[in-house]
Image (cartoon, rainbow, N blue to C red):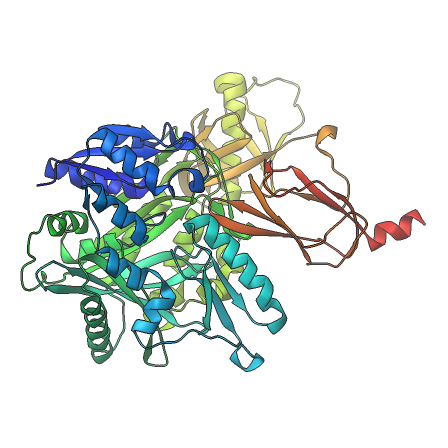
Length: 624
């Protein structure tokens, strides 16, 4: 029997495994980087071992350090979680060679399936080799790992070499393996997968389907089980092919077989030899704990001949610290308050934690289960809308809008191109934001001047003005100690306190909880508002054509041969930043001359740091 488990991972998945271990009476050990010294998974573990450094390559990707940590802490088993070393056969071998129990599939099965190229060969699917224009579009893909990292869509043949180089660099950083391959890119198909679970006695379960079609940058955003609207015959085919794949490699433990469904056909993508991020929707539908089953299988316990029967529908949304309207740029900073009521929440963060720059930007997974798909979707959207998330910009509003979009509600219109079609509308301003700005303004006035907001005077004073984003609010104190709003029109302040404001508009009264933390951001109800200063700080002015870091991160590459004095064209990639395990391109804003280049590979930069300056053609004309 396993007594102590070390989780070779961090964040949400480490906390998830620890939860099951506590329920089973198993002690837990965390590993942590310097950036994670105060992280939730460290606080929740019974013991923790430091991995010196911050970058994944120095810490969570160092299998030798992880094995040494397990031995030092007295663990007798290792759970890999997902990502990092979870699909590394050499790491699995190192764990067992050290006399520890590996809570995962045999290394040989990992080796056969963890490399997507070898998995395709096993399934009779060959990657593309000599790519021609007739093959376009194609997808460049990392052979190891997952999570959308190391993937590039190529639509022009001339872009292939750059895509191969970029994908390889990103894969090497994320997984320690820079191997990439090329496959046909199926436009707007449905991403459907099958959860498998196998024991060491020959039993293989197929625990239903999942639809993971809503993706950004090839990374899943919303997942559900079962995959809606698939013909029964196709579902049976998916089950049969998945079970065959597991049996072909002598699979033991939890795994997932992924397909792209288009035109009524299922195209094999890969087999993930680990627990998937989206496993909770399967757990909710089948009433099982997949982590507990992984542990039981690792202990040699046989599975029952058949899995339990499914019930109802489950939907999961991944809550990220990112800005969908700014190219999905990841965000960092203090998470002042965090709570998602009424649904299952798997997270690696709590109120007061800080979102670091070194790792994936996912804050949590929110999961709703109900008898029907429509009920589960409604419940999840409502929970996210009511969530308290005070801190960095998140994709919460996008998730709510996505769950309520007609193309999502109609399962027949699901597809991986969902965000390409609808992002502009989904990431646009929300209804009610102007009223939230009013609540923020009068709460701030109440905070500054007490209940009376500075007091009423016989001589009528000029309106006070506060601006949040694009919303200008004008108001004045009244004789009875309240506030009169003069813009926007039609809004009446029912009551105002520093932390709560009630407004009436069109005969409807709404209550706003208001909070601020001294960082220029005001949270009014579910709205996050950036206060605009009345006067621009001269120190914040930058030269025209300046390229500023859109996020904190590391400069990983500069375009080959790029030097000061070079001519560049609008949209030309100049350099690449890595932040939160994703690579982000920084391009020339316009055609002109590169007059400064401060980016150096390996340099850590903060948000707003000056990376380069491009003097545009128009600016050059003005100096002549």
